[in-house]
Length: 294
Image (cartoon, rainbow, N blue to C red; front, side, top):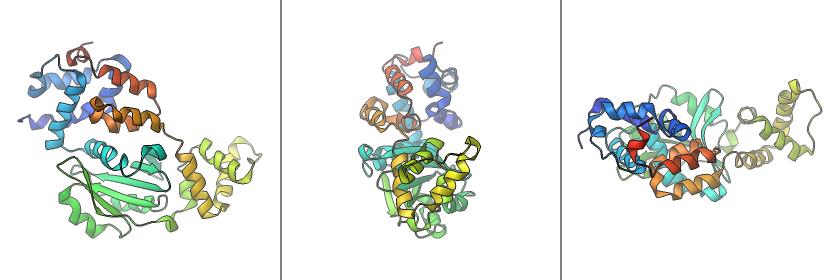
């Protein structure tokens, strides 16, 4: 299908909070209306088409012609994370902060696995620092990329880092398995990625009490205590609290709804906001023309 290439970038924004959050909040997106008016293909769609069909149609066009990070994340969530790692026993975290880096996707179950996405539109400038940082926090590390970038990645990535690729069949193919990196994990780095409620839960569980110090000192003292916990015990306790960070039951319900297959990555980003996701699901059956009108 011939869609004006200059609109691909704008069309890919349809799957971002810029559009989807507005639909959840107001049932309408001014930006979606603008993109639709500017793109000939979108102007030609049947205005009575259900919104889910509109999203799936745009998704298919972009997957074939403009695979930005969102499409990698969406396929990764559907094929690898929901089969390789069962959501019943896992927590899937998006944009997890580690040091100055923000991991694209992290799976917490019996271990910790990070997935860093490098599409053809991404720079490799920060990759070395990202891998170095992730190696201090996660057991297994994968870089997910396009088929044409595989040779380059094999030559520059450390041997313990796995490599995956997005195929034309909307699947993720493992090129190289990740090796366990648990022995390189640095307690201080892991601690700084935890929320206050998470690290206090760990300290309480291991020491049976929290330090009686002013609030201004709780972070420093808890960090000192965390770093004294034997590595294996700290790792298990950390996995336990991180598994509770996201609402995986909401994610499972969202993924089962076939009308939302193009929005799985958005669901992962918002899995702790069931009201928002349920609202989005409710709008998917509405005629697209209703979403384009304020």
